[in-house]
Image 1 (cartoon, rainbow, N blue to C red):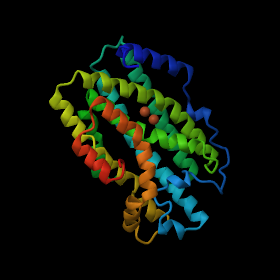
Image 2: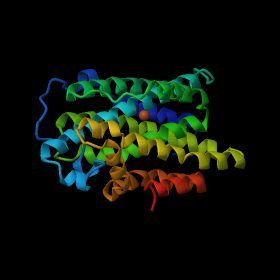
Image 3: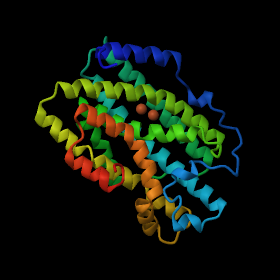
Length: 296
Ligand SMILES: [Fe+2]
Ligand SMILES: [Fe+2]
């Protein structure tokens, strides 16, 4: 795809969007009953799977853990997509309104808007409270789009989208998962695949034309995302909600959980390969990713 111009790539993605896009408000049956005996997240991918805490839980508690982890994922996805959308809208202020790149950026923005509605409806449907970020952190998150320009915007988008892609694909086919969750994931997988292509193409083209110092700086700050990700996906709020007496200890158990680290390693593999390919695998980032278990 990278031999094509940015506009040619955007054109392809625009055609794909015309052929296959969803309106989750009407395309998903929100009234369909939930199956009380099914999981909301694949059990093997849960943060505590296989730990002593997990072994002491009965099936009902395990399903409740999956419900809370699912809601935590969706809540995180909502603030992440909010930042991407703010970044996209600021980006197109500077681009040619006739270009296909502008048109696809706006199409992606529309997809993410519908995803946020879909995630909000899914949280409501599964009957759990969203996991809110504290006000001070929300203020910081809301400032990120001010700094997302050029390759930074595509990298930010890719870091969130690519790592969840593999996980969503595994879960969408798992027979132990709630049918409603599977439908939400299938819609998301299809539309995100185009966003991932768009972000990867943008990164390839910009990195190739970038001064070396800028590439080195970018390659070494990318790892910070791993720390945020690890904190977000082992959020003690989840463990408190399922009634564990020491949520901080549960977070430590999740961070040290070899099963969970393996799941994350698998999810990160495609992105690690891509960063190696385009020259964005910095030493500092690599050290962080190794420490949190994203890399061997
Ligand atoms: Fe999305
Ligand atoms: Fe996306």
